[in-house]
Image 1 (cartoon, one colour):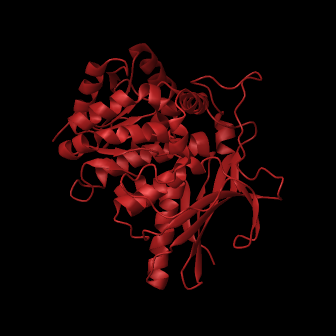
Image 2: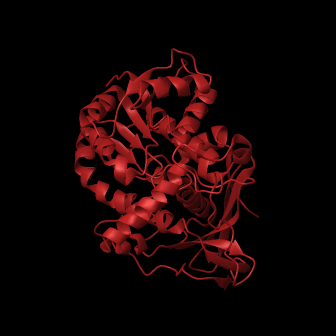
Image 3: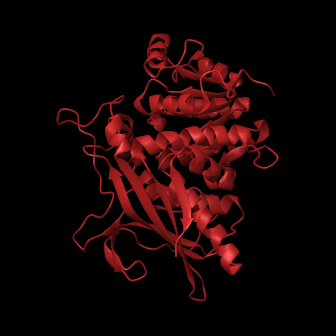
Length: 391
């Protein structure tokens, strides 16, 4: 079905939304082959963003507000896909998901809120019927890890003609640039998740269950990532990695959605390389501070800080017979803002341009299950990422 736009970027006036708009403009132009628009609840602010990123007045603007379901429905009807950066999603995202599911528009976000994602699975039947592909976690949570496992398993099949039943992800480097850290939106999301858990203790069980997003399936006990230990396989100490709580769920959901190609006994964990038992490890929490205070929504690392960051993740696949394989995923900008914005933008383009509904029909997906190798190709080409088999 023809729609006015292939992509509408909702939340473009926020910090990360603006970065996604800059990326789409740089790579695809404002009035080129890709038909896209920016959306938000204030035309004046959208006009300001359009001007500040250097886009021409011909870049379309769409008025929509998460508190107005009618506007969300109208927006969803105009686009093949909605990319949204308007979080925290448990506060501002549910209506957008519902509108996209009902109207057959694809949906992509950078949510790191497993409790909310679990709640959104209620829309799966509607999305299947309408053809909407809903893909959560299309930023640093959780693309490098989800596609990293996908890439390793493909390499294992090529080398051993087998899948690896045990995979370790080890964050070797995570740089946010001097003074860098999370944006105000990411900070607000973390606060929202903690507040939800305090208000409803049952959410704790969702946050700690690696199979919280695989309804009807419960795999084996997973490796304990809650404390530091000396990892003989990695050859270093490792410490808890705080993003593992969402990433592990997404990886297990990918395996679940694809029919368990990595096995129903698949075991996976994420840890950060550490200097010793008392070290907090690579990627320990840090925040971009503004005047000594945590950032507000709309605030975040400068361009120099974003470009000064990077990440490097090692994946170790262990075969049942003792053989092993190592791969890596790297990015050339800070993970939380620079890399995340490019991953999200490329995910949207990949879904509408490269993945037909015959290949990936309507439903609630992950990046690996929905887009796999096609997304890896775009990320390598346009997002400063690499996927490699290591010696």
